[in-house]
Amino acid sequence: DAGVIQSPRHEVTEMGQEVTLRCKPISGHNSLFWYRQTMMRGLELLIYFNNNVPIDDSGMPEDRFSAKMPNASFSTLKIQPSEPRDSAVYFCASGDSMNTEAFFGQGTRLTVV
Amino acid sequence: AQSVTQLDSHVSVSEGTPVLLRCNYSSSYSPSLFWYVQHPNKGLQLLLKYTSAATLVKGINGFEAEFKKSETSFHLTKPSAHMSDAAEYFCVVTKKAAGNKLTFGGGTRVLVKP
Image (spheres, each protein chain N blue to C red):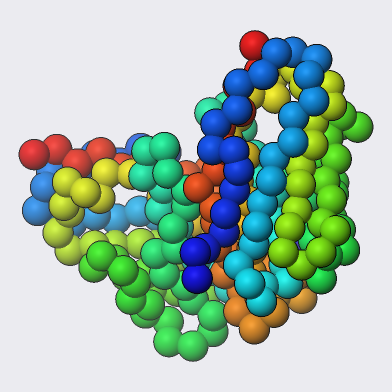
C-alpha cells in the first residue's frame, strides 16, 4: 500500500484565495483525520470522519474552513478565504476499526502571503 | 476526557548514551498509547503502541516503552542513541470508542551530539 497520500506537498497562495488540500486514505481504513501543525500550537486536530461521516469538527478554527469526505477514498480540506495565519503544515491521517493507531501522510505545507 | 503531558520539550544526549523521553497521560478508561516520531520536514511515523497487552512494548529502531498504570506513565527509552534519532517525538493517547481520536502531547525534540 502506498500509504496516506496528500496533495499538493507545498502550496503558496495569496491572502484571500481559496485553497483546497486533498487526501487519499489507506484503502480499507474507515477513520480519517485532518491535523494542523504550527510552531506555536503544535499538532491540532481539526476534524475527523468515521465511515465518511464527520464525527467531531470542534477543532475547525472558523467558518472559513470546511472539510468533506464524499467517499471512502477521498477527502478535502478547504480554506476560503485564506489568511496568512493559516500558514502551517496540514496532515491527513487514516485508521481502521480493528486497531487504534493512525497512519499519517507526508503533509501539505501551506504558505499564505 | 483524555490528555497527555510530555515532561521535556527538549532533550540533548550524546551518541551512544541512553535516551529517556517522559510521558504522563490522563484517561478515564483503559487507554491505547503510542509514540510517534517526526523527522525534519517529514510526516509522523508510528514507533510503537500499547493496547492493553504486554506492558513493555518494543518498537522500531531499538525503542521501547513501558506502560505503568499506577504512575499513569508511558516513558520511551533507547539504550544507545544514534545520530539518526534526532527528531521530534510525540506521545499520543486514543479512545477507540470515539473513532480512535488521537490526543497528542506537546512533543519532545531530541538533539544527538556526536
